[in-house]
Length: 220
Image 1: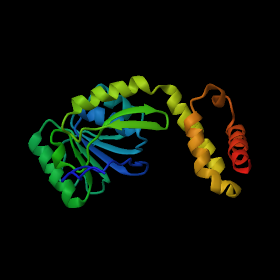
Image 2: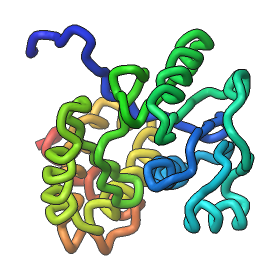
Image 3: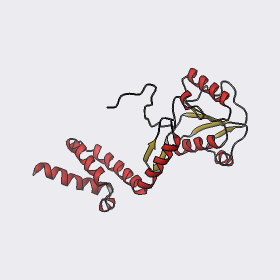
């Protein structure tokens, strides 16, 4: 295990469904942050800014978020679970960071990552498969370059494999009689998930194949 880094970061995936997320700002940075929230399944989003980009306007029109067309007022974030400060006013962003800290709200400060409580990584999404890269705020450009390589390496079939493995795992966990072989079966399934022949199996057929091969070895 590597030595811990003072003031470092703990990698985590957040489930945002049902949680109020507030974005302050309406420019390109706010748009990028908002896109990430929407792709993550956030369904309670409020954005506060006098003006917004055309893409943000389109999301508002589609009912994806609530837009409050005005400047931020102290107290607007009181009920928030997560805050993103993405204005072009550094003093305001700093003030938002302080207010969020006092209220115990998770915050991301676009122009001063060290002032917030979380940073957003570069992301490659393939259905249920999410691959993230971060340099802990030191070089977003490097994170993007690494992410480009991941994007080229891990194509659509990896997401499809992850989805199939999820279905298989549910079936396997429901079988008490297979508990002692569970880890071995799931490991074997992960290793062969990208195999073309396996891709044609239904989850039930795949499980039966794993049972035959795993228990067969144990009995031989």
